Amino acid sequence: MADGLQALTEKEKQTLRLLLEGHDAKSMARHLDLSVHTINERLRDARRKLSVSTSKEAARLLRQREAVPQSLGDARFGDAPPPPVDQQSGQPSTEPPSPPKTAWAIGGLAMIPFLVTLLALSAPTQAPQAGTPPAVAPAPVTETPVTRAASAFLALLDASKWQESWDATGESFRSLNTVAAWQAASEQARVPLGRMLSRQLLSEADVPAPPKGYRMVRFRTDFENKRGATETVSLDREGDSWKVVGIYIQ
Image 1 (cartoon, rainbow, N blue to C red):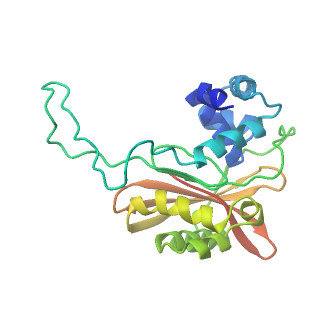
Image 2 (image 1 turned 180 degrees about the vertical axis):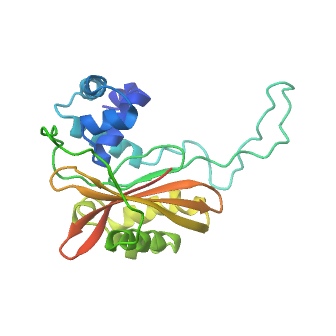
Image 3 (image 1 turned 135 degrees about the vertical axis):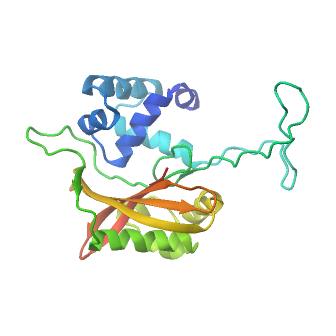
């Protein structure tokens, strides 16, 4: 299985990540400006490499791999990394190192750079029926109960309130992720972004993913260590409230 995951191309991984985000083949084709045939080929190749029968299972395997921190090998905590070497002179570079790129994935998928996804889908992806509306239908940028729920959730992340933010997620997400796992991933990936400086609501849209679709809210956010980020929060309705089922920051 590890060999199969390593054999996946970045394009195949990109397609599997979009699948977990709630897209079907048709909406992925629109999103990537490709044909549905090309999307299906990527999914088929991913299934073959991972020896699974469904694309959703392939996406879940990728999600699990990207959610597991890589081994530190023989590195010891507190050891400073060797200074970068100038490629022309061969001498240690005096330029400050670039900030690390962070991937964050719990029950969802990871993308780079600074991409956060927490997505728990419980129903298989189905092909859209004739007459299905576009996968993402833009809505006016106004404050609604959905955008307020998304903003409140992001504020909990800004304050490092991992327990409270986990409580604000949907049942499908909580069934796949523990508070401890969520906190560990959050401290590893969200904290390095630094203090939130500003956040602007960009859009709210419907995502017609099975079984009943989601609402997707996007923000433009400046962090202390990353300016101009796009935060995308996916929410599902549970009773009278909206719960977060996915989030990524790019």
